[in-house]
Length: 119
Image (tube, rainbow, N blue to C red):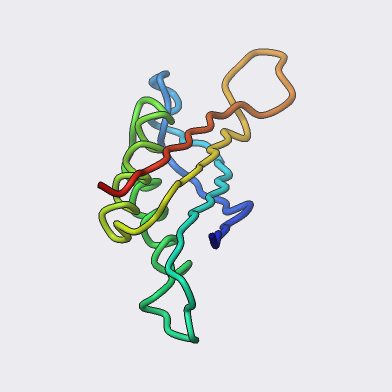
């Protein structure tokens, strides 16, 4: 098994439940791991998962305003699996770096992992 990781990717986006979040936006941080087994890669990009393409998927989905981060994560995973049907599992963490919570100093986020089985 091989894993491609994207770590600490920063985005500015308009995700959120509250109206102010949809207008002013927030800073987000994303971590993504994609596990696959394609045997020997032999220096062939077509036999692996391209991290540039993964970033493009993240960028597209993070720029689509959503109410819930869970929805963003689901959309990212679905797009990756569509591009790379040979992946075995995908894990994503999305952190909101400045949540609109009074007297809160920290970040909030979600994690989603999906495992795929070949039939």
